Image 1 (cartoon, rainbow, N blue to C red):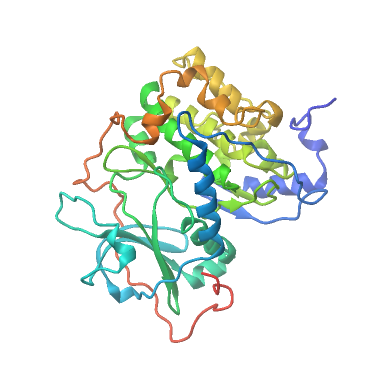
Image 2: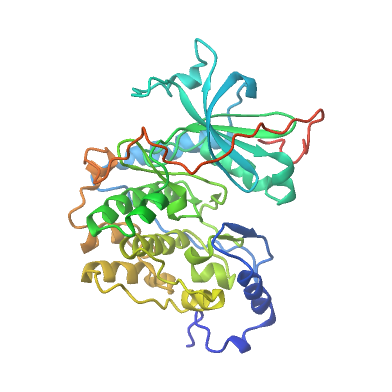
Length: 407
């Protein structure tokens, strides 16, 4: 039987796939999202991976987590806040349709839902928050209404040590606001760039936390779809915090049919447009582990068309410094056959956690953050790229009220 994931001849692929491929070629490493009709057939009822609980962590904890998530997801909280309730400390960055600022609440005493942000802070500033400001007009122009609302809905329902914490949300006539945990260490991407590449011990430390975060999300029926170093922050203790849930989606046991993510991290099944499930996150994990250890992507090429050909064929060459166990792990994750991809077989994520490369990882100690991180960021330094502080837009009318009604 011919392999469904192999391009035997680019000229021979059907017109639908050819058009899809050409659209891919116009994209670069920045995140993108294109909605399209599935090629043949509707959503499948195929199950995603079944994720056992982390080694040593009682399964009852995960059952409780699922119940808590469902309650918060189905009954979102409301918050009575306005932008002038906050004082801006500094800008942290800008995105395609918004910005992030470090702020502090001016009220004393603080509202109950801000009390938990008060932690020991050597800078002397308490209750610091990362305020994500989303411009309604820009989000509407980019047709991101559904994904902005979905991000807020998922963030306010999840609770895990290696995922950024949601505190509150509110909106006004021109903007949407999400209050998040302030993570002072900056992006993993920046640390990786400065280091060129990590040794296997450090890469393994970060990868273990990402695996536990993915396991948690998949247990809740959520596919993340945008795993990359830019979306992983490092906290003051050197641990990972997964952020940016704009592409995350609750699919439970079904499939997704939306092309989204970052080109070099796309799984073959996303490119081919045949529907996908949690397996795309394990593919992206393989890309990330490779990149952390090598300093470059396994499928990088100056010709974007070749990037997608390499992904479709799972064609990559391990760095000469890779150990045998690391080579075996990356090949198991970057497996185009879903039935053979690590994380998607009978034992689920345990096939990854019990892999020889992770033999020296104590998963419970990682979960409890009892292991000293190999690198502790200097939180007194500016760990974020310079950004100008701009005042949010204002409007006398409620823009796109219907589109953002559920925010």
